[in-house]
Length: 322
Length: 298
Image (cartoon, rainbow over all chains, first blue to last red; front, side, top):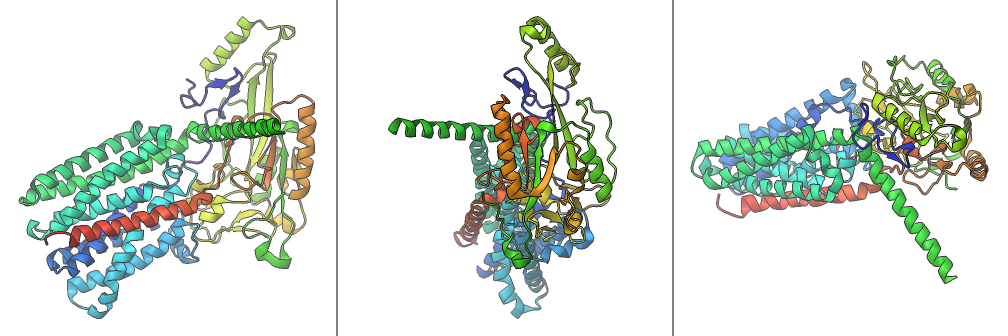
């Protein structure tokens, strides 16, 4: 193995040709900082919390609704700060709203976050202070509805890149992030609410946790060989931690959280940790797959080879029929 | 040959200029790096001092925010025939030495060939960087090229991860993204880009894209006829994953040997799939919320 290349990067074909340029990456590693996976986690939590708070309020569970609105407000206050801090030129953050582009999930997401943040602020303020009641009648369902794309668009955001493990998981990532959002919104509510008022949050957390484990598994299976970063290195360790914490949290939640507040807090914390680790593992796996040229080159070379083979096949069969 | 992009020439109407680009014929590149120097000087690109890399004569390493032209050097062992003077045992020993030393450098007389190629932003027909840019800092010029407006870019970094060639990069200490502009300022004054002007062998050819594509086709046919069996055009095809590029290449080996992706794709091709997945996930989350809150006791 060469000092400067990945394990397979420096292998040779036909004795002479190196299949990468000195083992260097073909694409750039993302320049995104740790604020981004934290935003994926906290923004998802805030988005799903809007829906939980709104529906709990409709159902007459005011204790749960008030606390979840407070959680949603906290999450959606932190989210823009994280995003702005990540910019190379933070003072130009308003340029994000210069246009609306459907080809850019980041553009769409900026608008969703702006709308979601505003409506959540109104709803939470109203729920906690009792003022702005009329505005909140519109604000609450709007915050709940905008929370759904807020918790999921981030999957499309990273999928619409040249990073192999992200782009090839474009069908699974939004679902995985939605599941993590449900688990973490439920978990945060469980931690903050007395057990007798937290039944809907427990159900949401359980549904989210089971879906998160299932979708992570599905994503890895569909990625095939590309899923390697989810088994190796930092991203692999984070992935294992995510699954361990989520599974343990779900078990504890199902077994004890209905009766014991302490168990509920422990289960909620485990689920929150699991959802955070899941986002971090996806984030880090992207970096690993960008850094090693074989993740970029091998699948592309495979496509070219298959295309050439099928072209030759077509040419041969058309010769045969002629 | 289809040269139209999403917004060129359509959005420019009568102000549209012919689409221009680079045909980089690597078969005549001598690795002088005049293009790298000319680009830096004309565009006032900050210095980027690299240590000695041991990667042949390449101490520039890659395209980045401060490198808009990069000359790659690839040293390849050619099989030594009986006439070449080396025995099979000698060849094997040399190969092993190079592997173990970690240097990609052969000594002269070892029967090597040297591939050199000047890389640059491809100014894709379907440009992922431009599609994902949330601020509109990246735009399609009247010449069909792709340029970053430095007074708009807020350094979100989306284009950096979207580019299938690893061209765009955020400049440290500046925070914005920088890349080749195909000398937008010179084009407006009917001058050719600095790199093409400086290239002493015409390895970098500038011109109207339709002319360049025809010229390239003739050139590759000549080379293949002359026995360069791996000579190939790269990014010349409007049916490829980026719709063909404004800057395309004649290579003497497969693209990955030069550090280029063999089948690059503009991720935007799959945007509908991504949005559908978001829609399904959002709907699923809505159902889960409704089930959790409404489907049981309070």
